[in-house]
Length: 273
Image 1: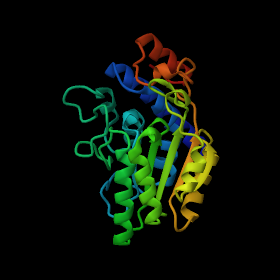
Image 2: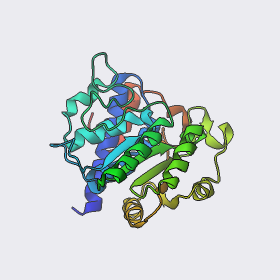
Image 3: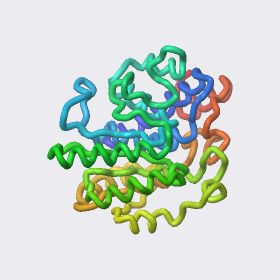
């Protein structure tokens, strides 16, 4: 099987696990987790220098899920990568579970930053990238941000600081699915033209199809080649990607599927219940 073939299979398995997690929890955020599955798959299974057997190794790359409500996609990737047993996924949001509704760095191996309050993840990532620069640490910092998250003022302070300190070891990936909890981004609070805004803040901008493994991989390669400025990858995605009745539907931002819906979704993804 080719590298692309392996990545496609892993991303599909992650999507199945997202659906199951949120269903068994009875709550959660499937739409934005599914839209980010291909990006997260490339990060964990192709791009990042990480080791599940040594999750705290000093020179590791770090991933921060700034859109922390999409925790199911990160949990599924971590379990698939061997950071913890897969059975833990079915305890999502349960009392006493280490897998809560948003990532907790103190409880979950492989989680680099506790996130959930939008805007704080990218801000913490700036600190991580700056610290690595000061320490001459080769580890890179990758941060996934949501398009609705761009409506937070905090993120723009972080973007400004990233450029000022020339953090070329920082790559932000924008999950540009166009929808947030209240509907279309453009109806709630317009943030376009986002590429021009990032450029004006001194960032290197790369625009891709966020579901094309070839484009995602090439974008990360381009980010590593860019010197003297941080890179943002604007990834056009589909909210609820892979599940017909969830795709491009803002109603699935934060709603758990019923058993019938979950079984349909898993079947569409080629999985078994």
